[in-house]
View (cartoon, rainbow, N blue to C red):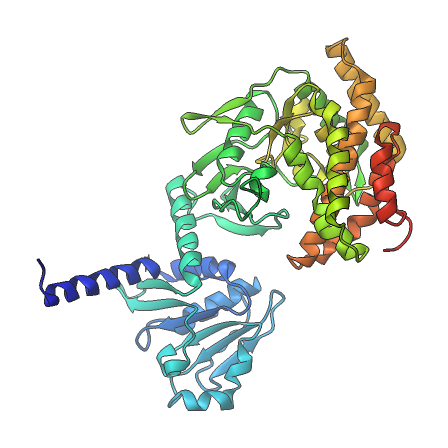
Length: 524
Protein backbone atom coordinates (compact mmCIF):
# COMPACT_ATOMS: atom_id res chain seq x y z
CA UNK A 1 0.00 0.00 0.00
CA UNK A 2 1.29 3.47 -0.85
CA UNK A 3 2.05 5.87 2.00
CA UNK A 4 0.71 9.44 2.30
CA UNK A 5 3.76 10.97 0.62
CA UNK A 6 3.53 8.60 -2.34
CA UNK A 7 -0.18 9.22 -2.68
CA UNK A 8 0.41 12.97 -2.55
CA UNK A 9 3.07 12.72 -5.24
CA UNK A 10 0.79 10.58 -7.39
CA UNK A 11 -2.07 13.03 -6.93
CA UNK A 12 0.18 15.94 -7.80
CA UNK A 13 1.46 14.17 -10.91
CA UNK A 14 -2.10 13.34 -11.94
CA UNK A 15 -3.16 16.95 -11.42
CA UNK A 16 -0.25 18.18 -13.51
CA UNK A 17 -1.07 15.68 -16.25
CA UNK A 18 -4.70 16.80 -16.22
CA UNK A 19 -3.62 20.44 -16.39
CA UNK A 20 -1.31 19.69 -19.29
CA UNK A 21 -4.12 17.92 -21.12
CA UNK A 22 -6.51 20.78 -20.40
CA UNK A 23 -4.00 23.44 -21.50
CA UNK A 24 -2.09 21.85 -24.40
CA UNK A 25 1.13 23.51 -25.46
CA UNK A 26 1.87 23.75 -29.16
CA UNK A 27 5.54 24.44 -29.89
CA UNK A 28 6.53 25.81 -33.26
CA UNK A 29 9.97 26.74 -34.64
CA UNK A 30 10.07 30.15 -36.30
CA UNK A 31 13.25 30.07 -38.39
CA UNK A 32 12.77 33.52 -39.90
CA UNK A 33 10.45 36.51 -40.12
CA UNK A 34 8.36 34.82 -42.83
CA UNK A 35 7.56 31.98 -40.40
CA UNK A 36 6.61 34.53 -37.75
CA UNK A 37 4.29 36.24 -40.24
CA UNK A 38 2.73 32.88 -41.18
CA UNK A 39 1.99 32.10 -37.52
CA UNK A 40 0.54 35.59 -37.02
CA UNK A 41 -1.71 35.02 -40.06
CA UNK A 42 -2.88 31.69 -38.63
CA UNK A 43 -3.66 33.16 -35.19
CA UNK A 44 -5.34 36.24 -36.71
CA UNK A 45 -7.82 34.09 -38.66
CA UNK A 46 -8.82 32.22 -35.50
CA UNK A 47 -9.50 35.25 -33.29
CA UNK A 48 -12.89 36.79 -32.50
CA UNK A 49 -13.95 40.07 -30.85
CA UNK A 50 -13.42 39.87 -27.10
CA UNK A 51 -10.43 37.49 -27.33
CA UNK A 52 -7.29 38.05 -25.27
CA UNK A 53 -3.83 37.08 -26.53
CA UNK A 54 -0.89 37.39 -24.13
CA UNK A 55 2.65 37.68 -25.48
CA UNK A 56 5.47 36.62 -23.18
CA UNK A 57 9.23 36.37 -23.44
CA UNK A 58 12.38 38.32 -22.66
CA UNK A 59 13.25 41.78 -23.93
CA UNK A 60 14.14 41.75 -27.61
CA UNK A 61 12.60 38.37 -28.35
CA UNK A 62 10.14 39.82 -30.89
CA UNK A 63 6.82 40.26 -29.06
CA UNK A 64 6.08 43.61 -30.70
CA UNK A 65 7.14 42.27 -34.10
CA UNK A 66 4.67 39.41 -33.72
CA UNK A 67 1.88 41.72 -32.52
CA UNK A 68 2.47 44.07 -35.45
CA UNK A 69 2.33 41.13 -37.88
CA UNK A 70 -0.94 39.95 -36.32
CA UNK A 71 -2.52 43.42 -36.57
CA UNK A 72 -1.54 43.70 -40.23
CA UNK A 73 -2.85 40.19 -40.94
CA UNK A 74 -6.17 41.01 -39.30
CA UNK A 75 -6.35 44.27 -41.27
CA UNK A 76 -5.44 42.54 -44.54
CA UNK A 77 -2.85 45.27 -45.12
CA UNK A 78 0.85 44.25 -44.93
CA UNK A 79 1.87 47.93 -45.12
CA UNK A 80 -0.34 49.16 -42.27
CA UNK A 81 1.51 51.48 -39.89
CA UNK A 82 1.54 49.73 -36.52
CA UNK A 83 3.61 51.69 -33.99
CA UNK A 84 4.84 50.13 -30.78
CA UNK A 85 2.78 51.07 -27.69
CA UNK A 86 5.91 51.18 -25.50
CA UNK A 87 5.25 54.80 -24.46
CA UNK A 88 1.49 55.09 -24.95
CA UNK A 89 0.93 51.66 -23.31
CA UNK A 90 -2.27 51.19 -25.36
CA UNK A 91 -2.56 51.41 -29.14
CA UNK A 92 -6.03 50.95 -30.71
CA UNK A 93 -6.72 49.99 -34.32
CA UNK A 94 -10.22 50.41 -35.77
CA UNK A 95 -10.29 47.75 -38.47
CA UNK A 96 -13.09 46.60 -40.81
CA UNK A 97 -13.30 43.25 -39.00
CA UNK A 98 -13.41 44.88 -35.56
CA UNK A 99 -11.02 46.80 -33.31
CA UNK A 100 -7.70 45.53 -31.95
CA UNK A 101 -6.06 46.88 -28.80
CA UNK A 102 -2.30 46.35 -28.48
CA UNK A 103 -0.99 46.89 -24.94
CA UNK A 104 2.62 46.99 -23.77
CA UNK A 105 2.56 46.87 -19.95
CA UNK A 106 6.33 46.80 -19.39
CA UNK A 107 6.32 50.23 -17.69
CA UNK A 108 3.24 49.43 -15.62
CA UNK A 109 4.12 49.28 -11.93
CA UNK A 110 1.03 47.26 -10.98
CA UNK A 111 -2.62 46.43 -11.69
CA UNK A 112 -3.78 49.57 -9.89
CA UNK A 113 -2.70 51.71 -12.87
CA UNK A 114 -4.91 49.81 -15.29
CA UNK A 115 -8.00 51.89 -14.53
CA UNK A 116 -6.25 55.06 -15.61
CA UNK A 117 -5.52 53.43 -18.99
CA UNK A 118 -9.17 52.60 -19.58
CA UNK A 119 -8.37 48.88 -19.44
CA UNK A 120 -11.87 47.83 -18.38
CA UNK A 121 -13.39 49.29 -21.55
CA UNK A 122 -10.57 48.32 -23.91
CA UNK A 123 -11.59 44.76 -24.67
CA UNK A 124 -15.38 44.76 -24.61
CA UNK A 125 -15.66 44.20 -28.37
CA UNK A 126 -11.99 44.20 -29.33
CA UNK A 127 -9.24 41.65 -29.76
CA UNK A 128 -6.65 42.51 -27.11
CA UNK A 129 -2.91 41.76 -27.49
CA UNK A 130 -0.93 42.16 -24.27
CA UNK A 131 2.85 42.23 -23.91
CA UNK A 132 4.18 41.62 -20.39
CA UNK A 133 0.89 40.13 -19.15
CA UNK A 134 2.45 39.31 -15.73
CA UNK A 135 1.91 42.99 -14.87
CA UNK A 136 -1.82 42.26 -14.77
CA UNK A 137 -1.42 40.06 -11.70
CA UNK A 138 -4.79 38.77 -10.44
CA UNK A 139 -6.60 40.80 -13.13
CA UNK A 140 -5.31 38.43 -15.82
CA UNK A 141 -8.47 36.82 -17.33
CA UNK A 142 -8.72 33.01 -17.23
CA UNK A 143 -9.78 32.78 -20.91
CA UNK A 144 -6.77 33.60 -23.04
CA UNK A 145 -4.33 32.43 -25.67
CA UNK A 146 -0.82 32.51 -24.32
CA UNK A 147 2.14 32.85 -26.72
CA UNK A 148 5.66 32.61 -25.28
CA UNK A 149 8.50 33.56 -27.61
CA UNK A 150 12.11 32.54 -26.99
CA UNK A 151 15.41 32.87 -28.85
CA UNK A 152 16.68 29.95 -30.92
CA UNK A 153 20.09 28.96 -32.26
CA UNK A 154 20.16 31.34 -35.23
CA UNK A 155 20.02 35.15 -34.86
CA UNK A 156 16.74 35.47 -36.75
CA UNK A 157 15.15 32.29 -35.36
CA UNK A 158 12.60 32.07 -32.56
CA UNK A 159 10.51 29.39 -30.88
CA UNK A 160 6.84 29.91 -30.10
CA UNK A 161 5.13 27.97 -27.31
CA UNK A 162 1.34 28.45 -27.55
CA UNK A 163 -0.99 27.48 -24.71
CA UNK A 164 -4.76 27.69 -24.48
CA UNK A 165 -6.46 28.61 -21.21
CA UNK A 166 -10.16 28.39 -20.41
CA UNK A 167 -12.32 28.56 -23.54
CA UNK A 168 -9.16 28.64 -25.66
CA UNK A 169 -8.24 25.04 -24.84
CA UNK A 170 -10.45 23.47 -27.50
CA UNK A 171 -9.94 26.33 -29.95
CA UNK A 172 -6.17 25.90 -29.81
CA UNK A 173 -6.49 22.14 -30.31
CA UNK A 174 -8.61 22.77 -33.40
CA UNK A 175 -6.15 25.32 -34.76
CA UNK A 176 -3.20 22.99 -34.16
CA UNK A 177 -4.93 19.92 -35.62
CA UNK A 178 -5.94 21.84 -38.73
CA UNK A 179 -2.40 23.06 -39.40
CA UNK A 180 -0.95 19.59 -38.81
CA UNK A 181 -3.51 18.13 -41.20
CA UNK A 182 -2.47 20.58 -43.92
CA UNK A 183 1.21 19.94 -43.25
CA UNK A 184 0.68 16.19 -43.71
CA UNK A 185 -1.28 16.82 -46.91
CA UNK A 186 1.53 19.01 -48.31
CA UNK A 187 -0.53 22.21 -48.15
CA UNK A 188 0.87 23.69 -44.93
CA UNK A 189 2.43 26.67 -46.71
CA UNK A 190 -0.68 27.57 -48.70
CA UNK A 191 -2.31 30.98 -48.52
CA UNK A 192 -5.63 30.67 -46.70
CA UNK A 193 -8.68 32.83 -47.40
CA UNK A 194 -11.92 32.54 -45.46
CA UNK A 195 -15.02 31.57 -47.47
CA UNK A 196 -18.47 32.62 -46.40
CA UNK A 197 -20.04 29.38 -45.20
CA UNK A 198 -23.55 27.99 -45.12
CA UNK A 199 -26.02 28.14 -42.24
CA UNK A 200 -24.19 25.36 -40.39
CA UNK A 201 -21.24 25.43 -37.98
CA UNK A 202 -18.82 24.18 -40.65
CA UNK A 203 -15.97 26.49 -41.68
CA UNK A 204 -14.36 26.76 -45.09
CA UNK A 205 -11.13 28.25 -46.45
CA UNK A 206 -9.82 28.50 -49.99
CA UNK A 207 -6.18 27.45 -50.14
CA UNK A 208 -3.79 28.70 -52.80
CA UNK A 209 -0.42 27.04 -53.34
CA UNK A 210 1.36 28.23 -56.45
CA UNK A 211 -1.10 27.72 -59.33
CA UNK A 212 -3.17 25.17 -57.39
CA UNK A 213 -6.22 25.74 -55.23
CA UNK A 214 -8.24 23.57 -52.86
CA UNK A 215 -10.84 23.94 -50.14
CA UNK A 216 -10.20 23.22 -46.47
CA UNK A 217 -13.40 22.03 -44.81
CA UNK A 218 -13.42 22.22 -41.01
CA UNK A 219 -16.30 20.01 -39.88
CA UNK A 220 -15.74 18.69 -36.34
CA UNK A 221 -18.00 15.93 -35.10
CA UNK A 222 -20.83 17.25 -32.99
CA UNK A 223 -23.02 15.74 -30.31
CA UNK A 224 -26.55 14.72 -31.33
CA UNK A 225 -28.12 17.11 -28.82
CA UNK A 226 -30.93 16.80 -26.31
CA UNK A 227 -33.53 14.08 -26.89
CA UNK A 228 -36.89 15.61 -27.82
CA UNK A 229 -38.96 12.67 -29.03
CA UNK A 230 -38.71 8.87 -28.75
CA UNK A 231 -35.30 9.23 -27.11
CA UNK A 232 -33.84 10.98 -30.17
CA UNK A 233 -32.60 14.52 -30.74
CA UNK A 234 -33.68 16.83 -33.56
CA UNK A 235 -30.51 16.00 -35.52
CA UNK A 236 -31.15 12.28 -35.19
CA UNK A 237 -34.83 12.57 -36.12
CA UNK A 238 -34.10 14.83 -39.10
CA UNK A 239 -31.23 12.56 -40.24
CA UNK A 240 -28.57 15.30 -40.14
CA UNK A 241 -24.90 14.36 -40.46
CA UNK A 242 -22.97 14.50 -37.17
CA UNK A 243 -19.48 14.11 -38.64
CA UNK A 244 -17.62 14.36 -41.95
CA UNK A 245 -17.93 10.71 -43.01
CA UNK A 246 -21.21 11.20 -44.95
CA UNK A 247 -19.70 14.05 -46.99
CA UNK A 248 -16.78 11.89 -48.09
CA UNK A 249 -19.03 8.92 -48.84
CA UNK A 250 -21.53 10.91 -50.93
CA UNK A 251 -18.81 12.89 -52.74
CA UNK A 252 -17.09 9.68 -53.81
CA UNK A 253 -20.45 8.14 -54.71
CA UNK A 254 -21.58 11.08 -56.84
CA UNK A 255 -18.29 11.14 -58.75
CA UNK A 256 -18.56 7.39 -59.33
CA UNK A 257 -21.99 8.05 -60.87
CA UNK A 258 -20.49 10.67 -63.21
CA UNK A 259 -21.35 13.94 -61.43
CA UNK A 260 -19.26 16.97 -60.46
CA UNK A 261 -18.85 16.51 -56.71
CA UNK A 262 -15.43 17.57 -55.39
CA UNK A 263 -12.60 15.06 -55.26
CA UNK A 264 -11.36 14.36 -51.73
CA UNK A 265 -7.61 15.06 -51.69
CA UNK A 266 -7.12 14.24 -48.02
CA UNK A 267 -9.40 13.41 -45.12
CA UNK A 268 -9.06 12.97 -41.38
CA UNK A 269 -12.38 11.43 -40.38
CA UNK A 270 -11.41 11.57 -36.70
CA UNK A 271 -10.85 15.31 -36.49
CA UNK A 272 -13.22 16.25 -39.31
CA UNK A 273 -10.72 18.08 -41.52
CA UNK A 274 -11.13 17.57 -45.26
CA UNK A 275 -9.04 18.87 -48.16
CA UNK A 276 -11.27 18.85 -51.22
CA UNK A 277 -11.26 19.94 -54.83
CA UNK A 278 -12.14 23.56 -55.51
CA UNK A 279 -15.18 23.35 -57.80
CA UNK A 280 -15.00 27.07 -58.55
CA UNK A 281 -17.01 30.17 -57.73
CA UNK A 282 -18.96 30.82 -60.94
CA UNK A 283 -22.63 30.71 -59.86
CA UNK A 284 -25.75 29.48 -61.64
CA UNK A 285 -27.38 32.87 -61.03
CA UNK A 286 -26.50 36.39 -62.20
CA UNK A 287 -27.44 39.42 -60.11
CA UNK A 288 -29.85 37.27 -58.13
CA UNK A 289 -31.64 35.91 -61.21
CA UNK A 290 -31.35 32.34 -62.54
CA UNK A 291 -29.32 31.67 -65.66
CA UNK A 292 -31.74 29.46 -67.58
CA UNK A 293 -29.14 27.31 -69.38
CA UNK A 294 -27.41 26.50 -66.10
CA UNK A 295 -30.67 25.62 -64.41
CA UNK A 296 -31.40 23.35 -67.36
CA UNK A 297 -28.13 21.51 -66.71
CA UNK A 298 -28.97 21.25 -63.00
CA UNK A 299 -32.40 19.83 -63.92
CA UNK A 300 -30.81 17.36 -66.34
CA UNK A 301 -28.48 16.12 -63.60
CA UNK A 302 -31.43 15.29 -61.36
CA UNK A 303 -33.32 13.55 -64.16
CA UNK A 304 -30.22 11.49 -64.94
CA UNK A 305 -29.65 10.58 -61.27
CA UNK A 306 -33.29 9.70 -60.66
CA UNK A 307 -33.35 7.37 -63.67
CA UNK A 308 -30.54 5.27 -62.17
CA UNK A 309 -30.78 2.43 -59.67
CA UNK A 310 -28.57 3.95 -56.98
CA UNK A 311 -27.23 1.91 -54.05
CA UNK A 312 -28.32 2.54 -50.48
CA UNK A 313 -24.70 2.02 -49.37
CA UNK A 314 -21.47 3.55 -50.60
CA UNK A 315 -17.84 2.93 -49.51
CA UNK A 316 -15.93 5.25 -47.18
CA UNK A 317 -12.80 4.66 -45.11
CA UNK A 318 -12.71 0.92 -45.79
CA UNK A 319 -16.33 0.34 -44.81
CA UNK A 320 -19.82 0.95 -46.18
CA UNK A 321 -21.82 4.06 -45.33
CA UNK A 322 -25.57 3.53 -45.45
CA UNK A 323 -27.65 6.54 -46.42
CA UNK A 324 -30.37 7.13 -43.81
CA UNK A 325 -34.01 6.82 -44.77
CA UNK A 326 -35.79 10.16 -45.26
CA UNK A 327 -38.85 8.88 -43.44
CA UNK A 328 -42.06 10.32 -41.99
CA UNK A 329 -40.56 11.20 -38.56
CA UNK A 330 -37.83 13.20 -40.34
CA UNK A 331 -40.29 15.16 -42.49
CA UNK A 332 -42.60 15.76 -39.51
CA UNK A 333 -39.93 17.08 -37.14
CA UNK A 334 -38.84 19.48 -39.88
CA UNK A 335 -42.43 20.69 -40.36
CA UNK A 336 -42.73 21.40 -36.65
CA UNK A 337 -40.09 24.12 -36.93
CA UNK A 338 -42.95 26.27 -38.21
CA UNK A 339 -44.79 25.80 -34.90
CA UNK A 340 -41.64 26.22 -32.81
CA UNK A 341 -40.20 29.32 -34.47
CA UNK A 342 -42.12 30.91 -37.33
CA UNK A 343 -45.63 31.14 -35.88
CA UNK A 344 -44.59 32.42 -32.40
CA UNK A 345 -42.28 35.03 -33.95
CA UNK A 346 -44.40 36.15 -36.92
CA UNK A 347 -47.95 35.82 -35.54
CA UNK A 348 -47.35 35.94 -31.78
CA UNK A 349 -49.25 32.69 -31.29
CA UNK A 350 -47.80 29.23 -30.72
CA UNK A 351 -50.14 26.34 -31.64
CA UNK A 352 -51.61 24.57 -28.62
CA UNK A 353 -51.05 20.79 -28.21
CA UNK A 354 -54.32 19.93 -29.92
CA UNK A 355 -53.59 22.13 -32.94
CA UNK A 356 -50.04 20.76 -33.15
CA UNK A 357 -51.25 17.16 -33.11
CA UNK A 358 -53.77 17.99 -35.84
CA UNK A 359 -50.91 19.52 -37.83
CA UNK A 360 -48.83 16.37 -37.50
CA UNK A 361 -51.79 14.18 -38.44
CA UNK A 362 -52.53 16.17 -41.58
CA UNK A 363 -48.91 15.99 -42.65
CA UNK A 364 -48.78 12.23 -42.08
CA UNK A 365 -51.73 11.82 -44.43
CA UNK A 366 -50.23 14.13 -47.06
CA UNK A 367 -46.83 12.41 -46.98
CA UNK A 368 -48.09 8.82 -47.05
CA UNK A 369 -48.54 8.49 -50.84
CA UNK A 370 -45.31 10.41 -51.50
CA UNK A 371 -43.24 8.12 -49.28
CA UNK A 372 -44.78 5.08 -50.99
CA UNK A 373 -43.14 6.13 -54.29
CA UNK A 374 -39.66 5.11 -55.47
CA UNK A 375 -36.55 6.09 -53.50
CA UNK A 376 -33.32 7.67 -54.70
CA UNK A 377 -30.43 9.74 -53.38
CA UNK A 378 -31.90 12.98 -52.03
CA UNK A 379 -29.13 15.56 -51.61
CA UNK A 380 -31.52 17.83 -49.63
CA UNK A 381 -29.74 21.15 -50.30
CA UNK A 382 -29.67 21.04 -54.09
CA UNK A 383 -30.12 24.73 -54.86
CA UNK A 384 -28.25 27.77 -56.15
CA UNK A 385 -25.81 28.38 -53.23
CA UNK A 386 -24.49 24.83 -53.63
CA UNK A 387 -24.07 24.73 -57.40
CA UNK A 388 -21.20 26.17 -59.45
CA UNK A 389 -20.60 26.43 -63.18
CA UNK A 390 -17.41 25.23 -64.90
CA UNK A 391 -17.03 26.17 -68.56
CA UNK A 392 -13.90 24.03 -68.88
CA UNK A 393 -15.94 20.81 -68.45
CA UNK A 394 -18.37 19.01 -70.71
CA UNK A 395 -21.97 17.91 -70.24
CA UNK A 396 -23.28 17.38 -66.73
CA UNK A 397 -19.76 17.73 -65.32
CA UNK A 398 -20.00 21.48 -66.01
CA UNK A 399 -22.07 21.60 -62.83
CA UNK A 400 -20.14 21.54 -59.56
CA UNK A 401 -22.16 20.18 -56.61
CA UNK A 402 -21.40 20.70 -52.90
CA UNK A 403 -23.10 20.54 -49.48
CA UNK A 404 -24.68 17.09 -49.63
CA UNK A 405 -23.57 15.56 -46.31
CA UNK A 406 -27.21 15.26 -45.15
CA UNK A 407 -28.17 13.12 -48.17
CA UNK A 408 -30.80 10.42 -47.60
CA UNK A 409 -32.74 7.79 -49.48
CA UNK A 410 -36.01 9.53 -50.24
CA UNK A 411 -38.55 10.74 -52.82
CA UNK A 412 -37.05 12.16 -56.06
CA UNK A 413 -39.34 15.20 -56.13
CA UNK A 414 -37.62 16.71 -53.07
CA UNK A 415 -34.45 17.85 -54.87
CA UNK A 416 -36.42 18.99 -57.92
CA UNK A 417 -38.54 21.32 -55.80
CA UNK A 418 -35.40 22.45 -53.91
CA UNK A 419 -33.94 23.62 -57.21
CA UNK A 420 -37.02 25.06 -58.86
CA UNK A 421 -38.46 26.73 -55.74
CA UNK A 422 -35.16 28.12 -54.47
CA UNK A 423 -35.54 29.79 -51.08
CA UNK A 424 -33.05 32.50 -52.08
CA UNK A 425 -33.79 33.11 -55.77
CA UNK A 426 -36.93 34.23 -57.62
CA UNK A 427 -37.59 31.81 -60.47
CA UNK A 428 -40.25 33.16 -62.84
CA UNK A 429 -43.28 30.87 -62.93
CA UNK A 430 -42.76 30.29 -66.64
CA UNK A 431 -39.17 29.11 -66.11
CA UNK A 432 -40.21 26.84 -63.25
CA UNK A 433 -42.83 25.21 -65.45
CA UNK A 434 -40.40 24.85 -68.36
CA UNK A 435 -37.79 23.18 -66.17
CA UNK A 436 -40.37 20.90 -64.56
CA UNK A 437 -41.57 19.85 -68.02
CA UNK A 438 -37.95 19.24 -69.05
CA UNK A 439 -37.46 16.97 -66.03
CA UNK A 440 -40.71 15.08 -66.68
CA UNK A 441 -39.85 14.53 -70.35
CA UNK A 442 -36.44 13.12 -69.45
CA UNK A 443 -37.94 10.79 -66.85
CA UNK A 444 -40.63 9.59 -69.27
CA UNK A 445 -38.01 8.96 -71.95
CA UNK A 446 -35.94 6.84 -69.55
CA UNK A 447 -38.97 5.06 -68.09
CA UNK A 448 -42.29 5.06 -70.02
CA UNK A 449 -44.09 3.89 -66.85
CA UNK A 450 -43.14 7.10 -65.04
CA UNK A 451 -46.37 8.84 -63.97
CA UNK A 452 -46.30 12.69 -64.19
CA UNK A 453 -49.51 13.10 -62.20
CA UNK A 454 -48.09 11.26 -59.18
CA UNK A 455 -44.93 13.31 -59.48
CA UNK A 456 -46.95 16.55 -59.56
CA UNK A 457 -48.62 15.64 -56.27
CA UNK A 458 -45.25 14.77 -54.72
CA UNK A 459 -43.79 18.03 -56.03
CA UNK A 460 -46.56 20.12 -54.41
CA UNK A 461 -46.47 18.15 -51.14
CA UNK A 462 -42.71 18.34 -50.76
CA UNK A 463 -42.70 21.96 -51.91
CA UNK A 464 -45.11 22.80 -49.09
CA UNK A 465 -43.08 20.71 -46.64
CA UNK A 466 -39.79 22.34 -47.61
CA UNK A 467 -41.23 25.87 -47.44
CA UNK A 468 -42.72 25.04 -44.03
CA UNK A 469 -39.37 23.80 -42.76
CA UNK A 470 -37.31 26.69 -44.10
CA UNK A 471 -39.71 29.32 -42.73
CA UNK A 472 -38.92 27.86 -39.31
CA UNK A 473 -35.20 27.52 -39.98
CA UNK A 474 -34.77 31.10 -41.22
CA UNK A 475 -36.59 32.56 -38.21
CA UNK A 476 -34.48 30.34 -35.94
CA UNK A 477 -31.30 31.59 -37.61
CA UNK A 478 -32.44 35.16 -36.99
CA UNK A 479 -33.68 34.70 -33.44
CA UNK A 480 -31.29 32.15 -31.98
CA UNK A 481 -28.15 32.63 -34.06
CA UNK A 482 -28.24 36.39 -34.63
CA UNK A 483 -28.50 36.18 -38.46
CA UNK A 484 -31.42 38.48 -39.35
CA UNK A 485 -30.47 38.57 -43.04
CA UNK A 486 -32.38 35.33 -43.57
CA UNK A 487 -35.67 37.08 -42.81
CA UNK A 488 -35.63 38.85 -46.19
CA UNK A 489 -36.41 35.50 -47.84
CA UNK A 490 -39.63 34.90 -45.90
CA UNK A 491 -42.01 36.53 -48.43
CA UNK A 492 -40.66 34.30 -51.22
CA UNK A 493 -41.14 31.22 -49.03
CA UNK A 494 -44.69 32.26 -48.14
CA UNK A 495 -45.57 32.59 -51.82
CA UNK A 496 -44.14 29.14 -52.53
CA UNK A 497 -46.01 27.67 -49.58
CA UNK A 498 -49.34 29.09 -50.73
CA UNK A 499 -48.76 27.97 -54.32
CA UNK A 500 -48.06 24.39 -53.23
CA UNK A 501 -50.95 24.25 -50.76
CA UNK A 502 -53.28 25.13 -53.64
CA UNK A 503 -52.98 21.53 -54.86
CA UNK A 504 -56.45 19.93 -54.39
CA UNK A 505 -55.07 16.96 -52.45
CA UNK A 506 -53.59 19.34 -49.85
CA UNK A 507 -56.83 21.19 -49.09
CA UNK A 508 -57.06 19.95 -45.44
CA UNK A 509 -53.54 21.16 -44.77
CA UNK A 510 -54.23 24.46 -46.52
CA UNK A 511 -57.17 25.04 -44.16
CA UNK A 512 -54.97 24.52 -41.08
CA UNK A 513 -52.45 27.08 -42.38
CA UNK A 514 -55.13 29.58 -43.43
CA UNK A 515 -56.58 29.57 -39.93
CA UNK A 516 -53.27 30.52 -38.33
CA UNK A 517 -51.27 32.52 -40.88
CA UNK A 518 -52.09 35.79 -42.64
CA UNK A 519 -52.05 35.80 -46.47
CA UNK A 520 -48.59 35.88 -48.03
CA UNK A 521 -49.04 39.45 -49.30
CA UNK A 522 -50.03 40.78 -45.87
CA UNK A 523 -47.18 42.01 -43.60
CA UNK A 524 -46.75 39.95 -40.44
